[in-house]
Length: 444
Image 1 (cartoon, rainbow, N blue to C red):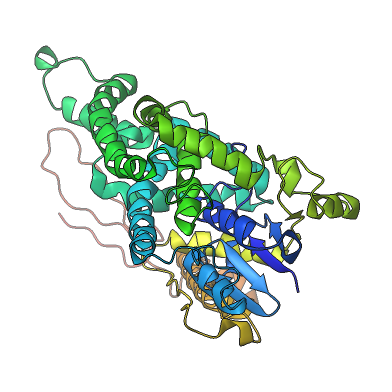
Image 2: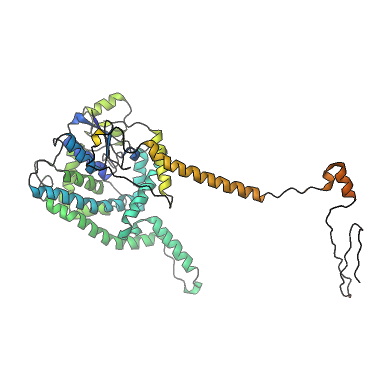
């Protein structure tokens, strides 16, 4: 049975917009025979038990996450699909593990800052998502992923790259300036001025972060073709290509990340360019991944395509789109937090009969919470509407002949008092007059 690797779709001439997906693509492209797997740009995280892409589907087994996928392939093939089996030296295996973890922890925040946090760059990232997502998920997924990226990089103190944050600071400073007398006020800072000032200071921090992430990697690479060997790539090379290609290749308005690599790490840049051509087969377009006809799909699987990857067109799934919308909506609610469960690599996933999380189990809690919230809001609005309606006042004359008779006798009607204004020059005295002439009273 052919394995299916589901990923976020292509962007910036790369097979995927996500570093984890690029890492998985690089691994399968070197570990598996071409006729044993297909690449599906479904851009649907609900397919994964971890709710994150990439995800590998092997019949009824579903494996989410790059490390879990590697472990599964190693066990399924009895080690034949393990590209690290060539490294028998314990030091080499230790380097693979250590540098892979190091690069993931150091480079991922840099990609978050470059692709999502920086407002000018995010506009291009959002446009790239629009071309790979079906309606209406293109309106929900990019802001959700940007929010996650901001949360991951909040501790780095580089919010000045975010134009929205700068605009909030400008409004706050304007409110504070309104309390100062006009003669003592200074000129108000503009968003452009704040951005130039803070980004210039942030550039020093960014350069230091780039050096911390990539300098050890270039020292390990040296003049070799791959990180550990000139002959074959390792899983560390897959991780390196996944992160470095997204750092170096996309052309962004704020290109501090690519400029830092070009200016100080030319060997890494050449490593990325050569690796992308050899592993990914060159530039990839959205049209390569989102095929429509069976003939085109067969041509791609047989290798008659520019990118050299076994693309298969994704299926349109409205239920998955609805699940993505619900997840995005409830992730924005402060008191609701979605728990992500990672599938353990030690579980016998190849023998499972169904994915760990079905669509029903995914949608049921949000649907129940949504129904309760709608019912509560509807009850409140109904109560408010009824409380505003005053009871209609009715006269006795509206109650038939008996009512008209009692109305003529002035029975049960309230008395009305009229105060007569006092004449000029006299002490005001209270005069109460019954306008109906019943029970006349005068006070002198």
